Length: 440
Image 1 (cartoon, rainbow, N blue to C red):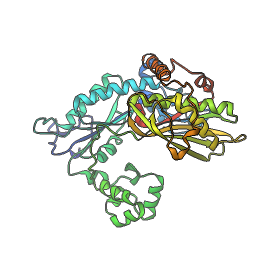
Image 2: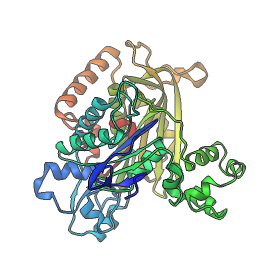
Image 3: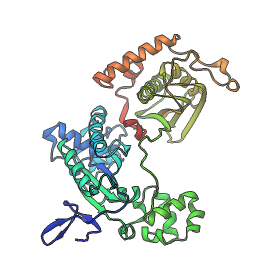
Image 4: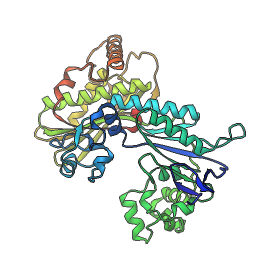
């Protein structure tokens, strides 16, 4: 077995019948990836589902998509982001569930606690992935592979599994984590990054999507080895500053740090509908329900946003966005929902069908004290036309939101439902999109 990069349960190589771990010098980054996470949690919570194909996702009859498929379902060709109707055709005997995001967040938090116990340098990049810096130091000389093993054992005790990539950079660790699933451990030792990366297709590199892949292939570049040997000037002309990043990473370099407090740039939520919405009486409650999700997440993060956005995808799949800039930041959906409904006039007219709606807040400030004039617009944006809040008294709004947040914290997100939220239940695909950071 090659000791320089491994697909080994032992994390080492055989020498005279004994397990040996080669010394590690320099930076060491782990990428911990929870295996088929949502489906694994469902199988943990439902013992009868273990060993059977499980699909977490939206309704196949309501334009749903697959969020996660268990490895038993993946054997039939099912994968995440696949239309649920296609997944059902491939695996008609699968167990389907809409999932429990409250439970997934709970399990994710337990995993992150395991990682933080190993290193203070943890960057959670999604609900089921995190980078961990475990570089040996003069004060902590423990081998990174030993740390990776201990993490896998800790995660297994929770009843789920993870795959881990170990390398000298985020790029190498991320690619390595995908090489041996489930419960795999792939180690790329310092100095052997290019040997590991070279034969892999360009699509293996994070940030290279379908269009970039086509452009690279058009210039005869199909592998990361080819990308590493490409003319940096050509890559800059094709992809701008991203071309330089591609070149550095294909050569095994990546100086991006572990960001223990990754900045959230926006908080948003969107919902697709099983049948296109056609009348204002259905569209307005949907906007209000989505707004309540965004406001809730803003308060959980201790953020207030100055830029309010509304997204509409029509029945013909065309898309339109509209924004309003607010003089004061907010996390209060009882105040910003009327503004969203006013914004709706700019993107919807009677007779137009709506397939998807989304709401977002960005331009953040840290949470502060109560603001009397929460929704004054900047003077040049017509502040005199600001719609009134659903409850005029800011203190009453704050009290109501605090009470509903408290109940949801204790009993789950569905424990309290406003009328507009109840109205759209049963009309969605059970598939929704959120910022990855919203799971934190």
